[in-house]
Length: 167
Image 1 (cartoon, rainbow, N blue to C red):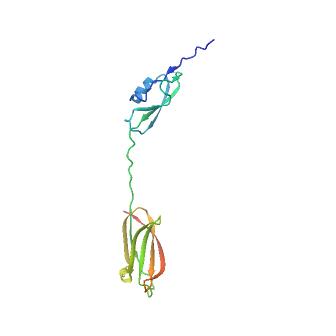
Image 2 (cartoon, rainbow, N blue to C red):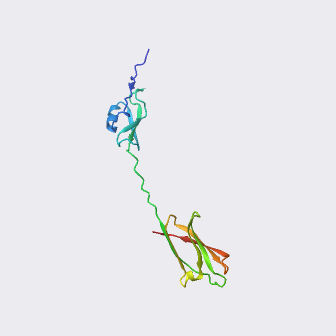
Image 3 (cartoon, rainbow, N blue to C red):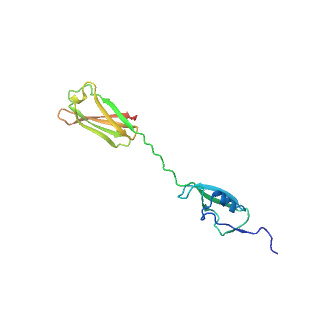
C-alpha cells in the first residue's frame, strides 16, 4: 500500500526571467525561502540565482535560497596618504678631514626616494643642510649620509632613522 504523503511540486524558475525578490518569493510561496545578496552586473533587487533548479520536484516547505543582485560593485575609493620630509642635517663636530657628503633617502622598504650627491661643507652652512622631499608613500625611512674625506673618497656612513610628516 502506498503512502499518501504530500505531493511534490515543481520548483518554478525565478532566476532567468528578471524577477524581483518579492515576485520570486510569491512564486515560491509553497517553499521555505531565504535570501542572500551579491554584487553583479544585473540591476539591484533582481533575482540572479536559486538553490533548487527550476523543474526540480520538491516537497512543499522545502528550503530554497534565492540570490538577489546588489547591482554592480561600487568603485572603491582609494585614498593614499602622502608624507613629506623636511629636516636639517648637521655637520659632525670635527670636519677637519671632511670635504662633504653623499646623501641617500630611503623609505621603510629600502627603496631610494631621493639622492643628494656631492654636497660640500659650504652647502651645510651654519644652520645645516635642509633636505626636503614630498609625495612619500610611507611614514618612515632612513637617511644614509656617506661622509667624504678631503680627496672625495668615502670616509664613514651615518644612518639616521626618520619619521615623515603627513602632508
